[in-house]
Image 1 (tube, rainbow, N blue to C red):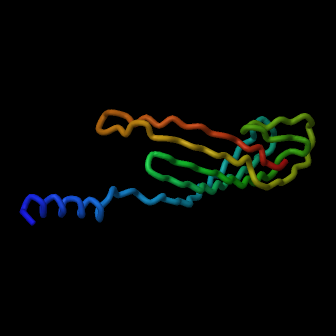
Image 2 (image 1 turned 90 degrees about the vertical axis):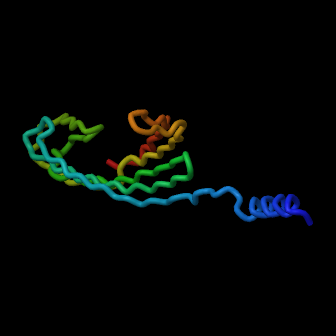
Length: 136
């Protein structure tokens, strides 16, 4: 076997062993909490506790995230509703109620089209879907 044949054989065998490295999918679990307090157009102080858990899967340029929020509201006037951060009060009741439960679940997907560097921004279009799972 000549040196040329040996070199070609070594090169082919190294390609078969090495292959192309692929990153393993990355699974992330995170949590964020927030507290809001205000009158929100009423004469009562309303306390809102928001606790969201995010489950995220990233694989190369793809990213998929599921947000599962839990919301707790204290001192909401009887008959009032909280919609999109606004309190609507159809009555002037002096009674209040407390409520808690799961909020609206969000599913978000994004794909990195272009990875920027330095002053050049990355381009990552995404889509977000809301599942109306919130209880009262």
